[in-house]
Length: 87
Image (cartoon, rainbow, N blue to C red; front, top):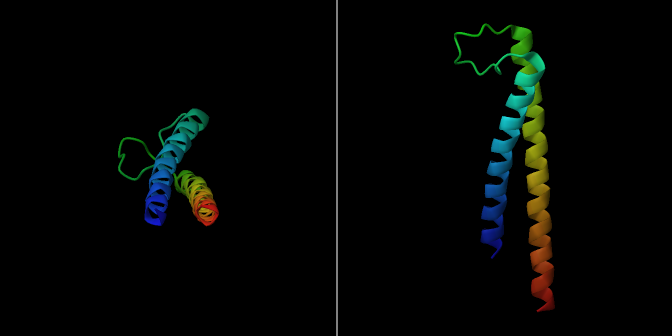
């Protein structure tokens, strides 16, 4: 069951990362009026300042999601271990 919880935590982390990326992209587009700089759009000129700002925001959101997912997984593992001790 411990492996199941770890796999579930990984799945939740991936899903949260996907949702976080979409949220950052949407907020960036609504705020700046431009598509987020991804490096493969030759149509949209991107300044270095925009690229660095977007990278900083994306990395921050990603780190927060990773920490929260890890904490949630650890809490689930601890809770599961406690319930097995009671049975």
